[in-house]
Amino acid sequence: MDPIKEKIINRAKNAVIDLNESAVEEIALEAIEAGVDPVQLIERGFIEGMRFFGDLFEEGRCQLPQMFAASRIVESGISTLTPLLKGSKNEMCCFGNIIVEV
Image 1 (tube, one colour):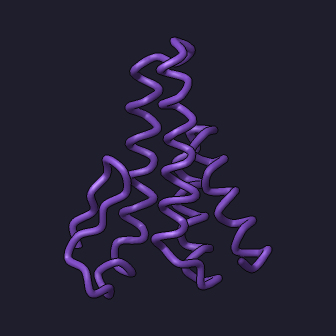
Image 2: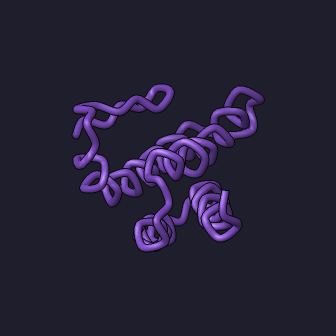
């Protein structure tokens, strides 16, 4: 993968980990402009950031409110990407436990 696109995906993951909703939305828009595959951004960026909190929660090092905050932030990023997903041939995209209806 292009190093610039890889950097954008990593920034998306870190923005979720930092619970930075505005950064997630900005990065989603930047990814669209850079031609990053929205599914890759969701799977390797947003979902990986969410997985970070899931792992901490399983270890007892994260509270439920943090999980909900991360989930809301991921949802915000996915909402930014939804218009691109609507152009796909699928009516629904599944990412682990997250389903995006387009």
